[in-house]
Length: 84
Image (tube, rainbow, N blue to C red; front, side, top):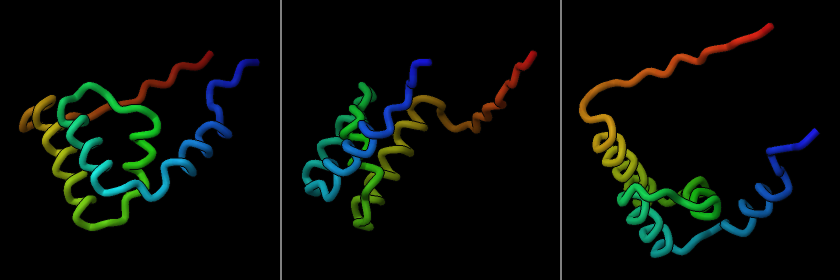
């Protein structure tokens, strides 16, 4: 059976992405605003933010992306489970 979640790789990326420089975070968020996708390493850096100013910038970027893609509306996703 092939495993598609590589826990060791994820832990390594998280460890190596700890304490990113604020300028690096700003670069990642600017890239995110272009909506061209982020790498695992970039995403890991964003998950480890603690600085209130950078967190606010992260939330502003997420809001911008959400409004650009979906506009001013709510979108719900309903999971579909299929079994035998």
